[in-house]
Amino acid sequence: MATARIKKGDQVIILSGKDKGKTGTVTVAMPKADKVIVGGVNVATRHRKPSQADPQGGLEKIEAPLHVSKVAHVTADGKATRVRFETRDGKKVRVAVKTGETISG
Image 1 (cartoon, one colour):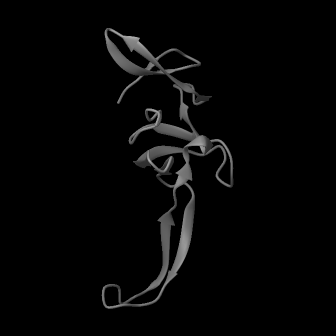
Image 2 (tube, one colour; image 1 turned 120 degrees about the vertical axis):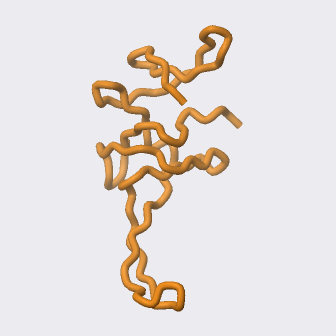
């Protein structure tokens, strides 16, 4: 399995689907499933029956996972970029392909 190019806390842009062009921060990364959850993006509505835990019930909005191939890192100018790995000062770091800047995290 390859090293994760997108991690929790990264700023990403959506490349395809109904939310194409939206940006957000990765809140959950699931590297084994190759999925991420991005805040405020890919929101699904679930109809919930009232229960003892939630006596009100009603509509519940849930952020659904996206495949990592549908998201890309955002550069400082707001454009999508791929990520590559380089060794700098003896450490393996993530680097933006378009700008060459090091991605923290």
